[in-house]
Image 1 (tube, helix red, strand yellow):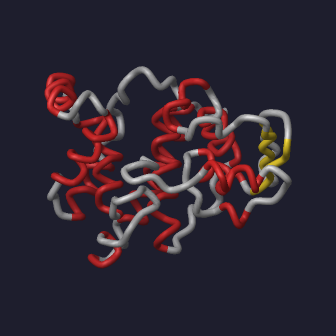
Image 2 (tube, rainbow, N blue to C red; image 1 turned 45 degrees about the horizontal axis):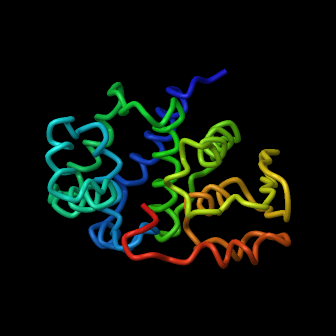
Length: 215
């Protein structure tokens, strides 16, 4: 059985391979992360591995101790050309992801933001393995991810992955592919039309785009 570290390595390589093929225009396209282009999302993917604790604390102190604000500042200030960002993402192999989010956090970070990049560009993560998807879905519905979800997103809903057998919760059903559920549970409303079930209407009321949100 693959470890989470193995899954991270596979997802990283798949994304690096696709990013390396993008032209300059693609890097400036809007991502699913509100207000960020593709390049800002890639910068954000490497931020946890490159940011020292002292620098993070300084930035937190000067940005109202708001981590989302810090992430936005760092991503927007990163002026590295695309090839350097790709190389930086590749170089995260073997580096330690910051503690606190649990062992699945680095995988979820890659899978969610990989979709934030791929979907607007019409790219696919060919054959996202069911095991990778289910670990990510477990993480996104766990207490550790509560700060990443809009308040009340899970309440009264039963989520069902139609392609991996994963389920969570009780109540009105929301069914769809694991990839669509991942994007939705990460707070992105862009794939709601691909979901079915009595619970989708409730999700539409919860998932409204927020300035500076969906990160």
